[in-house]
Image 1 (cartoon, rainbow, N blue to C red):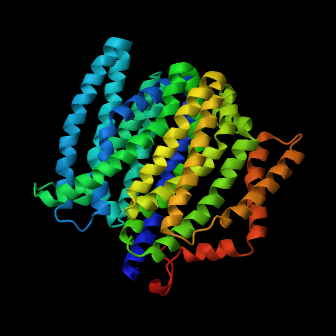
Image 2 (cartoon, helix red, strand yellow; image 1 turned 180 degrees about the vertical axis):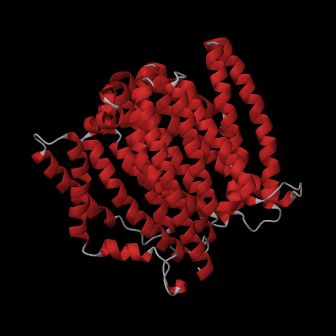
Image 3 (cartoon, one colour; image 1 turned 120 degrees about the vertical axis):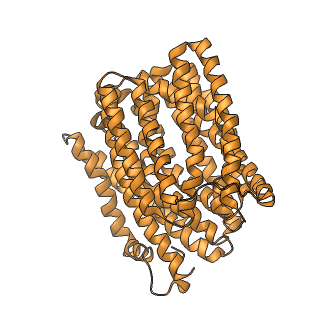
Amino acid sequence: MNNSTARRALIGATWLTAGGYISFALNFGANILLARLLFPQDFGLFALIASVVEILLLPAGLSFSQGIIQMAGEPEIEDTAYRMTLRLGAVLGLIGVVSAVVMWSWRGPAVGILLLAVFGVRLITTLSYVYSAQLEREFRYRGLSALRAVGAAASVAAASLLAWSGAGVWSLVAREGVAILVTYAGVRRLTGWRYAGRTNPQTAQRLVRFAVRMLATRIFEVANYRADILLVGAIAGTVALGFYDRARLLAELGYYAVSFAAVQVAFPLYARFQDDPARVAASFGLIHYFLIRAMAPVMLVMVVLPRELLAFLFGPRWEPAAGAMRWLAGYALCLPILDNVKVLLTGVGRLNDVVRIKIVQVLTILPALILFVPRWGIDGAAAAATLSAAVGLAAAYGALRRYLPAFSLHTYLRPALAAAAAAGLVVVGRTGVPDVVLLALLPLAYLAVLAALERGQLLHNARRLWPMGRFSEGPAV
């Protein structure tokens, strides 16, 4: 890895993380506000419609835009990917209109229009990815991060204003739509690239082969990620789904917080050095190390203090989601770690392994949901989601060992000991302590114990993330 590339990657990670955390903070605040202005059925209805739209948009999983990163050296890759995306978008648009008409006749005009609106704004993302992929490929995250922060601020303002005025579920639609439109307009300007129509038939053929494997991955990913939403909505109704949706949101907050570097920067980095396993292994090792240590306190709070966290953030009326949230703690831990392994395998071209992981997850979650949800409701759905994530992570580690034989799981030991010690301290001494103090004390106790156990290793690895004097001898990140 040369000096210039390493610096771009690290500077990109810095900008992406800074901009990502601004967006994260804005969206987190919006979630708290909207949970107090809207009702469970609003979140449940939006989650159900969004899941239906995601299934209808499955062909978008061809992800021609990802080829711009993974196949960077192919001639006319940008124009070819854009033209193929336009054609795909036209087909998807027709599917959206037909689906909205069907929904209109089945559930009424309000639901039909809602589906069409969500479908339309999400369809725009298929085009915006062609532009943003070019920025990510070159690690140009400074403008991209600022743009996403602006989009988040605008979407939060729009959603909050509409929710305050009584718009209900439409405030959630506006939140998503404003963010997508701002991002699309911005990435077009940032890249300075315009479609010139210079497509390459050979590139198109290779892009199709790459995209078909990406689609297979996407199909199983959506089936795994949305099956619980659809089944809870169909069996338990939109009110129960609203509670489950907010519990899963909190379970995924940690993932969103770390995904900027662990996914968006990691993918082009792994792809750039896919022919150098040593560099990939060094990069992955550091990211994996910090992911485990960052997600352990998230899991800890969800297991020990789920009711307190829900009441503190969203208010007392959301406490019925506490049981599901406790079951989702394992999901919260596994999700970002699993995603990073899949990003690595995708970046180095091992898409067949990613597909196999997804198949394993789908074959785990579908029967679990069928068995658990009718009997235990949202708690059963949460248990099924955690089971699928854990089984998927085990399968991912198996695939990873075939690519990186030296990979080891020993890095889990000290965070596990620190989490157990912190949980014991809080459980024993929680009597009479205010909830907000407990919520702060638990992660602080974990960090204190972990710092004592690591004996400088934490600081050493943190220093390895920063540019080194001789990049050719250091890790990839």
